[in-house]
Structures are given as structure tokens and as C-alpha cells.
Image (spheres, rainbow, N blue to C red):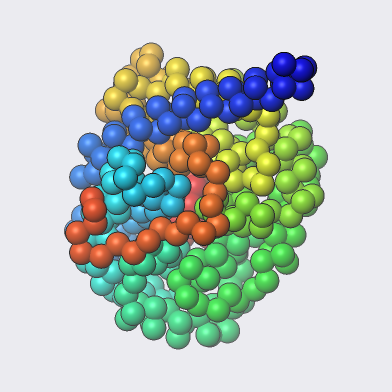
Length: 347
């Protein structure tokens, strides 16, 4: 065996280890999500005028998106695919087969969060023609087109318009240039809020990891250089939620960062994961208060662990769709209301 052959073999071994460790974490995390599905259910306050959207629609929308992503990156015979399909069907039933989206649109016609949540279902073939028709009417107004939004949020709305069958009201490259990441900022200015904008810019650009080629070369080069340092910092600080999102970014790039770095990151995350499968947003995992007892404090980070694991274990296949879910399936930012200029349903 030549020195080059040895390097290739070691690289393949490291990639396999990363995939296996990520898979184990993702399986445990998805099992926790499935066991706690009832806490994602919409309550009577889902349509209340002053209801807290961040405790109703936001968790359900994030559940739907992660389940769609798991289905897109696993084979139908995979138990993870079956569990994700079951949870996606559960989430769709919570929306009244899409009927509640139409009610939301009537109550808050210029809010974008209903469309952003709906877009995840639509990408899996779960659609409601009445909602799409009503939203298309609103999206043609000048108000919808000119409402001011944070740059990363605009990218999310543009991707949701595309997924929901609407014409995009702005150009993606222009929207990207206005984001923190699009400006290729000094890497030492990275902090928590910037981290969440970085992750979601990549999620929206790549359609949640499905089209890594949509990331411009200069952004890919920038992230390959600096993402490892940012991830290492977040892991050292016990910021597991943001760490999971950064791991998902690594899995969304055309050419992932160093596999040895990813191996160490997943090993650290495994130590933080609770025996129940829950992953805390911040702080200690297995020490102290069990995260499984705190749904609000761990549901998002646990979902992000599932998402990152799915991307890590399976490089995106452009031809792979979520499929249509009909009948019985085999199987941090805050929402802005009213209006649609705030931070949205994504974190």
C-alpha cells in the first residue's frame, strides 16, 4: 500500500466513523421526538389573536421540516424514514390537512410565517389549494413585495415562495449579498446571532441541504476555512443547538470540511446527548437536570441533531424528493406577528 493509499483508507475510515456516530445520535434523537409528539400538537390557542406562535406553530413547523429532510435523505425501507413519515403525517393532521393555514392567512394576511411552515409540507406533496390561492393573491400586492425584512429572513421567504408554488418576489443572489454571510465578514466577528443567520442562509440557499451546488464558490471557500473554528468554539461553550445547526451546514456544502473535525464534533455531541435521546440547547447534557424533562429547552436542539445527522449520513441527492404523503403515511429567532418583517419561524 502506498502512502496515498493509506491516506485514502484513513479518510474513508474517518468518514464511516462520522456517519455511524451521527446516525446513532440521530436515531436516539428522533426516537425522543416521536415519544414526545404530543407536545408538538396544536392547542386551542393556535388561532388565538394574542396566542404565542413560538409555542404552537413554530415547534410544529420545525418538526415538519426535519421530518421532510429525513425522508429526503433516507431510503423508504429505513426505519428512520418510516418514523419521519409517521411524524410528518401527524403534523399534517394537526393543521387540519392544511385547512388551518387558510384560517391563519385570513387572520394575518400579510404574515409570512404561515407560508414558511406550509412550504415544508408542500415540498412533501401535502398541499391545500385554498391556502395557495389566497396566499398567491396577497403575494401580488405591493405591500408583500416591499415589506422590509432582515436579509436572511428574506432568503427564507423567497425559498418558501418557490416551495409553495408562488413567484419569488426578489432575486436570490441579490438577497444573499445583503446577508452577514454574503458579505464574507471578518471571522472574529462571529457570535451567537451571527451564527444563526449563517446557518439559515445556507439552509435557505440549499433548500435545506438538497442543493449544495447553490452555495456560491466564494461562500463555500469561506465556510470551509472558518466553519471548523466556529464549530469548535460553540462546542467548547456548550452551545449544542447552534453546534447542531453548524454540523447541518457542514453537511449542506458541496465539499464538507475536514472529516476528523466532524468526528470530534459528533463525539462531543454524543457526550452531551441525554440517555433519553434529547439534546439540550445549552449547558451540560447528562449532568444536572435531564433535558428530557424540559421540552422547550431541548426540542429544537434535538430536532437539529436529527437534521444534521441525516445530512451527514447521506450526501444530498438532487433527484431525491420527499415524495407525496397521502392518507396513511407508510408509516432562533421568533415568529413575527402581525406582519412579516420579523425573524420568522426559523431559529
